[in-house]
Length: 287
Image (cartoon, rainbow, N blue to C red; front, side):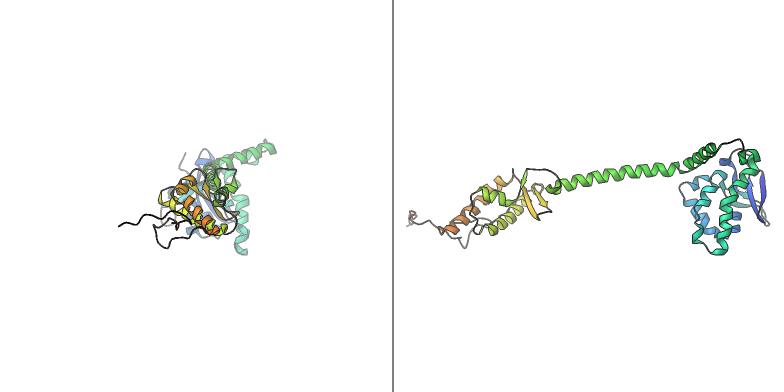
């Protein structure tokens, strides 16, 4: 690439560029263009440097001025149209909008004509299909880094969605088929508990079973059914809890319902103690 500085007239403004042998290494001074369009240079410079695609075509080089050579921000010619397309005319004031549209329509073509010949720029030897192919290739190249990052983001998002669906299925049996988890009502009914007073017993047993499982680091055996708003328990752990206190709670409840026993006022926490049954042999008194 040469360092020849070129100035081109454009509707009364001066376009400053450094010639290259290809559009991607032909540099266009951006400050004169931005200010001629009536835009804020400070804002546009920050946008150029921050953009993931445009920043790859930014270069700082010496540009002659009335006060001598100064470092100027340049953009490769192949990305000029891309930058112009980032400016939305409808968001601009009327006095600026017309100028911006003129630059968007003509600026890049004028520069390309100047550096790479009228025959190539006019494209008389190219078909409409070939024109479209060239345009598509330029845009694809410019967007390639963005597309790559978007593909990576989509892959990560798909993985997160899969993990979320798996978590929901594991947490809520209504989201998937399962027979390993049952509500406490299932175990109480299987024990032959009569319907009278069964609701209170089920709620008490459910709470006590949850507490026991959590204390014994078996909280993973509990699930929550969102549809019916109730806890479910793994069928393998409930029998263990039944041996600990569940079966005794059922027996005490059934005795209470049939009038054969009463709950003792005192006793080990978490246990149900029964009073002596009628006609049972009393314990021998200790002398």
